[in-house]
Image (cartoon, rainbow, N blue to C red; front, side):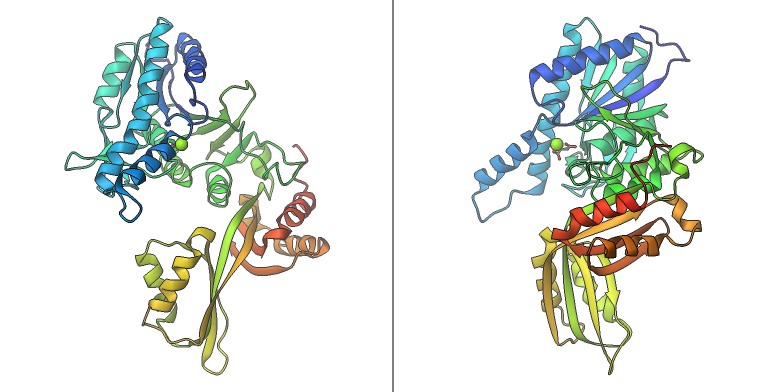
Length: 414
Ligand code: ASP
Ligand code: MG
């Protein structure tokens, strides 16, 4: 194997469904060995096998009984073992194919984090050990989703965060690029299960991808954020099908990036909280939302009406799973007087996303006209520089997404 200075350093990541059985691990090991023979230096991050992280969570809850949640420190050490299983098995499989490989836990790989168990953030990566192993001609397999805090305790980075490990490693190692292999073969213009004409994009910008990711496309938004900051090109591609994936990058807009609207993001798990008859004075919005922030609930779309008789209505959306907690947080807070608060569910968010929109007029009206033509009522509207979002009834998602895909001609290549 060549380890010459001109060989590319690449970080790869394989997701849980790609490494769910020993057979799959062996077949990925073969691909990794083939790639290493081309001369590329490889650091490979893996997720835990299949749903094994969920199994570990179930075990923890069974051990503590229904009324007591497991201590977070113990939980993190437990959950980190899922990725130790897959990374060690991967190293063994590669060994069996006559290639030298070494598995490293997050700690051994030099990944330091803050001390927020369950959703730790990476503070730094000391790459000395990884570089030593690479220099010795080894393929380095790093357990995803974990690190070590300043007290020497194992932390985990949050669900789905092996992507974050991979991008962080690519940044710290100044890798040529990060390759995320998964059970989808790239990023599509929208969800192909909802819009049959959805098309795979050959490339997408970081900001667009960030909008698509946080609005439902399959990719951990934190990892995209990190990739954007450190300008790490990220390829998302299929683990087992040898077809071109999607390159997420920040280069000059070419080809598809020139399109005004790149994709339609869909999030079907939206609920809204409407607070009526809110006194209209400075501090009201903060007063209502602070208790939610304290509870770790993220608020998304916020709409406040202009005041009528000194009172106003204040509506915001949260993820469906947080709706009940958000409602009680508003009821509990004593900061702000209001007449009534109600929760509405069964909503969805449909957004058109594209960097090209920021300097062109008419996208909003095209969007609204298309939705009207499909008989879709808009409940709330919000925009950013590169996105226009409508909150609609969940039952209207398919009609809305299909109408928008047509209106913006997203099935067209070029
Ligand atoms: N195994 C972890 C999880 O299931 C991390 C990951 O898969 O990225 O959330
Ligand atoms: Mg997983």
